Each structure stands twice: as structure tokens, then as C-alpha cells.
Length: 236
Image (tube, rainbow, N blue to C red; front, side, top):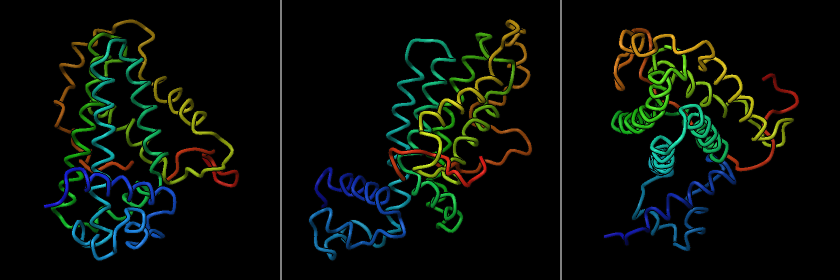
């Protein structure tokens, strides 16, 4: 039996190497060396580098889901919670940009049972985001809109970040985060009063796990921890 905590150490080591070197440039030998193991010993835990991609993704999502749960259950307004949730989500993507970009490209090539596992992790994470939006709609802080679709729109915008984020670009991670918050929250905030939000929510609400027609239940994506984000020669 593997030693308790050793597998988690392996995932953390793999994530660090994926972030520092990129997924494709990281070899099993690199991971074994960083773990202080022989390469043959590494195969006691995984059969291939791909076997680390989905668990590492799930491990990352689980860690950030716990942070999101703390945000959702904390005191404060829905706007304050959503600001913190979006900022935390964007930081997670920036920290692991290479892995999430790779995940976006390769998730459909994964075996079905792995795709299902990833989708389940994404769904649970999305529901937590949705709960914050739902709170704001019910209190009238946000406009009377569908919380499920609003959460999908927010996460969809954030999850596209790895497609254009470049460390060393003309915007810092904080500047990118501030821009996301300005654009995403502007559309949500109810500046004109309550607008009978609860009644509209009741009419439009599909439940935390249901999606309206035309919205597919697709996994989102979520590398580098610092530096600047928008490359000067890339459109934003």
C-alpha cells in the first residue's frame, strides 16, 4: 500500500513541474527526480504522465472548491463574495495556466470515465458559484436573471484566460482581475432597485444542476504564478 500523503505529494510535485516547465516538456524522469524516486518506483503510483493530468486537475479544483465554499459561507454581501470568488478563480487559472490550457485541448480525448470524473468536479464547483449569484438575485443585489446561466457565463469568460494569457505581457494579473470584475459585475448589479427579483427567479430558476435548452454541460478549464498577462502583440 502507498504511504498516506505520498500520492498527494506526487500531485503537488507534478503540478509544480507542469507550471514551471509546461506539461509537454515535463518527463516522468523529471517527476521522479523531484520526488527523490527512481523512475521505476514512480510507476507504482501512475502508469503514464497522462494519469497525472486529470487527478492533478481534480486535486486543484478540489482545493479551490474548498476556498470557494469558505467564501460562499462567509459573512458579507453577494457582490463581495462574488468579487472574491472571481478573483480566486482567476488566480487559480493563472497559477496553473499551462495545465488548464492543455486540459481544454485534450479533455475530449480522455477515456469516458475520466471525462465523467472531471465533469463531476466541474459541476460541483459551478454549483458553488451559482449559489453566490442566487443569493444576490434573491436579495435584489443582482438583477433578476437565471443564476445557472450567469454562473456559466462568468466561468466561461474566466476559463478562456489560458488561451490568451502570457506572463510578461502588458497587463499584470491584478490588472486582468480588476478588468474582469469591472466587466462581469457591471452586468449583474441591480442599480435600479429590487425589481421583484424573487418572483423572476422563481419563474426562471432551473435548479442548481439543470441547464436550459441550448446550454451544454461541458467541463470548464481552468502556468505560472506571477508576471504580466496580455502579450503586447496579442489582441485582447
